[in-house]
Length: 307
Image (cartoon, rainbow, N blue to C red; front, side):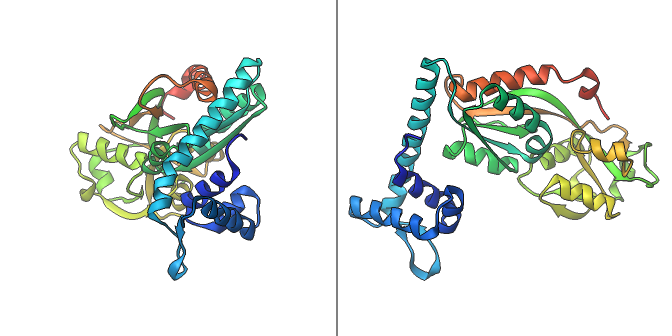
């Protein structure tokens, strides 16, 4: 990498506010990371972190340095990509962030295809809820993001690439299994939901509102911060939940969970790629965008419909 190593160390410590986390990511010892930061502080003649009270905080000088460190990292990536392209090759980094359903069930095979085509590109994928993913993109921690459900922001460019359907999942021997139920029946069921900030939760809330139901009218018994957690909770008999059709395919094949249809409730949403506002993505991000559009177009038509 062309990025100045001390600035890279500083950037990661600033990102995590942890010398330990930065050391783990850099595959260095914690004293080595501390020494790199100390040397950078000596070069600049100013403290970058306040270590008082057992907690790490950025000083005013450290806060001022962060955006420049991010810009230099981006410039380094662009330089590596430009040189590789000029020599007829691809190299550098591709940093992605995706909300959990896309990260776990959609992107892995497409990333594998990309890595086969461009083996010199180092790909990283971070997952979180929609708010966390977009925050990482705005901060410049990733080059492109993937989200579920509607999102409108003027500082971002959002490009849908695949329609998804959410389904109501129930235990295998539930009375609603493979049946259609009335919307009023849903109000009395123990409902499991994703946490605030989740794109999946927003889609469910909006669909209920469109059908004339407020989430407060439902019996929400638990909130979990992952789709896998929701599915495990349903299997344990703790309630019913809404998840993407992508997430529940294995459980349906194994018949450990079933789907129920809710009359009058439409839970379609768009999976979308997100970029900073401005020109179209180029380099590694642009290549991955093209691959995603091609791969999404190849998804069998049967998989585009409800489970």
